[in-house]
Length: 458
Image 1 (cartoon, helix red, strand yellow):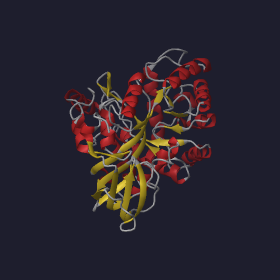
Image 2 (cartoon, one colour):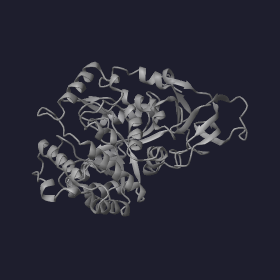
Image 3 (cartoon, rainbow, N blue to C red):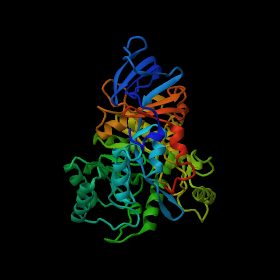
């Protein structure tokens, strides 16, 4: 343990025995009562029934009666920046602490506005100079205001640079065209790197045929449900058309409003994605934030005061001519959740994330990760399904399921301990007692208090 980590650590014994625990192992199996876990050297050494596991001499014993141990959350649409007003704000110090406080021990970012800041944040955590989750960093392939990658050669040069710089994932954005996406997938795959996408110019079906690995935002932004002519305005090479990008998203949302989530069109798309082994990332908190007349999500008090004021003003303008983003009907939010569960039931790899970089600044890292599980259950997933999607499935996508994502001997000791039983009441996921990352236990209150009222400034 380093000096930078020390202020946030509550448990750091060489050997720890967690006894009388309820265990949810992340695989979807039922919770098990009366379990003992032995943690040593950052790993889970043993798991078994109370009284049947030998507790090593000198081990620190922690009684978890009434508490539940889960795998650390593995969420795959996260960020180290946020919006506030007309500015992009850094959150590379505050967001990692909030993720860890909520039990999120591994993340994939879904794009960076300042790539060097993200690379440095990951480096500091790996060196013990800061605290936060393990990170798979994504570089944007295309983004609002960025130069367009319209051909294969420019795409290759761009990705060669950033992958050589240390990025480990690629994310296509709305106006990435087919030529650039195809080149990006080929280059990334040749280097063992996966590609995901928030798509618009390329349909989900086309992207699946090209070999994309993942698609973001569930089924909320599906260009497949809109006619090609209306969905895909041509943008001249090398130009930027922010209005066209926003219009494309609005048309996709309009297409979702008209589709039957259990109809033939939706089923055919799901079947294509499953057949092509394309994962889908659910980001329900970001979509909920687009719905009018709902209570704000929790965690707003973590924002800097001026960002809190901006958030309140933004919400007040929603649905008016002065609004800055499309409004999502509540029924459309339900539809995408229904299709996500159908995708999972059809054999697709559903993973989860939260997108805490929404225009309203109302989706706050850590708090939003708990909200993702709550929303999944609200829309028909069982608690155990929601937990598996948020742990083991994410680890499978990252290719790290041999080490993280579930609870078993010889796996990394990335664990979330909560009061209550999330297998019955999913909101108990918020009752975080301690978070273990590689066997070191972190105090969630200390992590949150260190950034309270400062998010957006650090």
